[in-house]
Length: 397
Image: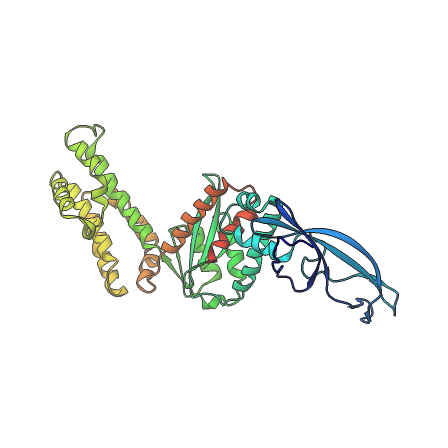
């Protein structure tokens, strides 16, 4: 027996170590199950008669940064009562598996936060095994989350899978701040199919979205009691675009000279919220607005919409919106007049914000996380794996 080594617990009490060898790059351990008798799967009677043994080499978690290979002495038993020959249960590794359950669980957990290739190289296993492990890990966690009740507040937003060619839709729980599902496309059919499957659909009170009509139609069809809420940041972005178009028109094509250069150089100062401007930026802003009455009016309208979202009640917001629309109609700015059809078409959904003050900020944040996932993997060919990766962002650890 070696006298220059120490014994380290394997951590698998079901197995008995028969032999062990430590090599330069790995451990080779021969094990056998401790049980002396096994119940027959056919008749249920207990037998101790061993029929034959075979050796199966399986991989376990690393020990001291060395790979651990377990050679299992797999036994087959013969039942005294019905004469059936059967293989003993294999709870440590699983039926027909060449790796231990704890190794597969570890691989799945590691691959939630790293690329499959990196985990594969680190643990010296195949990429296919890591993919299967992470899919199993996510599936087990989703099985727990899917049993939760339908949320009161939801959010919808599309994101690009392949730039400009393929889109999916993320459906989010705004109450718990989790991704509920990822469905194909950005149309209403797949969204309707998912919403129809909600166990308690009448519990949903409001759904936040951008001004994408297929989403509104899907919610109105499947969740008639829920209010559609237009994301306020989406509307403000339209207002900012109108402001920027006014600036661009006044700037003209020769943006490198004189006042045009100043308008181009300070374009982001014009779009910045008034309350966020520094003292120096306020001086710059006043100089810019003094260049043109139209620019001053455009900036005033932009700030009016931002301030309008701070209104306390819906009734007050309706009155103020009428005044804003009247100011745009009577004003000289065609860029803002182009907003009027949008305001009319989505009027009730925009005003619903004052009943349920929810936004798609969380959903947009998830979309940024999705882009990071794509970049880490240099894109996904298998969209099912991509969907699982997105749903895995719900898990903290």
